Amino acid sequence: MTLSEELTWRGFVNQMTFPDIKDLDKAPISFYFGVDPSADSMTIGNLASAMMVYHFINAGHKAFLLVGGATGMIGDPDGKKDERNLLTLEDIARNKNAIAEQYKTVFEGKPFTTVDNYDWFKGVEYLDFLRNIGKHVPLSNMLGRDFVQSRIGEGGSGISYAEFSYSLIQGYDFLTLYRDHGVTLQLCGGDQWGNSIAGVDMIRRIEGAEAHVYSAPLIINKATGKKFGKTEDGAIWLDPTKTSVYKFYQFWLNADDEGVVDYAKVYTLLDQAAIAAMAEQVATNPGAREAQKTLAREVTKIVHGEARTASVEKVTTVLFGGESVANLSTEELDMLAAEIPTAALGTSVIESLVGTHVASSNGEARRLIEGGAVSLNGEKISTDQSIETLTLLKKGKNSFILVR
Image (cartoon, rainbow, N blue to C red; front, side, top):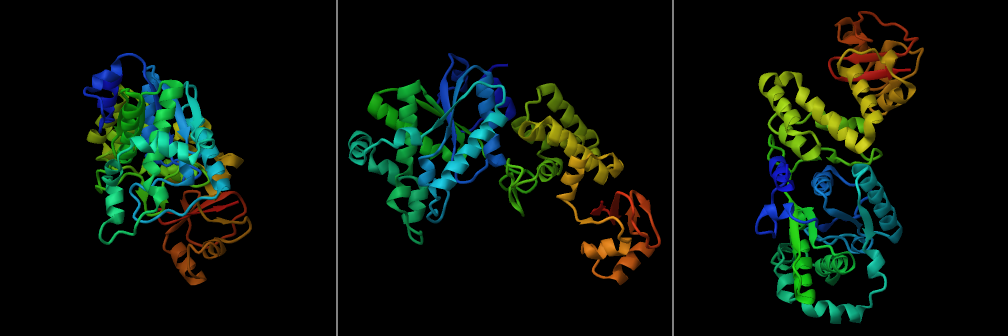
């Protein structure tokens, strides 16, 4: 399958400057892709674009993955209603290093070069930049940007010169990578189209050369019509300290039936036969949620590795599939303990329920037990008792306590 066919089948077709997507199937292209270091982790929104990048690398194109040490000092204003708070230099350094490490994880085993735009901006003199770069950028282009108009128009919060100039900085990245590495293509998320076009125009005006942009589409939750990956708890992060491996896995496991196959095309490397099998599972037996299990397994493997994926699957089976908690390793018990309340061995069932706030009082706990709503390791109980061995205590269908 050619790259253009792969991108089309997987749904990675959005805006592009190429007259024909099949232009991507010709000679190898040097391209770049970057992530704004506004946080110390990518989200699954970034991951969607990164998976698109993966297919470009697989097709033989040469990747330069950028961490924005310079752009991070300003912050991308696109899509923001108000001025960003500036990050400290220490925050920027930590964030860009974290993103660089995530590049290594997501693109493990694939060839790429990491670049930091601070390396070429740190020596740039202000007057030289205005004379050699700013002189070639029409103000009308910058004023025409949607985010600029929304900020300076009636009711807008205003915009600083620094944020107004952000597209100049990103355009200079493209120009520098073109000059130093022959980069002629920028890959980006759909929300970065305007910033990316600035680089194409700069290369054309200053170098008289042709460059292109190819953007990934916004991933939409088909069940809600909203941006995919936004939850009540906020974004879904790749960093396990921000979104635990368990919560990450559960997010995919809870994917909607309408979108699960499309999510798998974007977020996994499964081939057409495997995706077709998922579609068949959704059509014939959606209640088994086998497609969601496959999606959760494959995405978690890419981000967190096979060992952690196997552990989180085992923990999930203990909670919802009837496997014994005694079969979990110490590490897996720790993973489980980070997600559900815990009580100490030697406490009674009532003490465990009340001490973890699963029941509001001894009386409520006793009524739950007598009503058959409480089980120990899958066995319902009708009277209170002391818990002396490793136990998974369960109230109802979805309230758990680990007693260890």
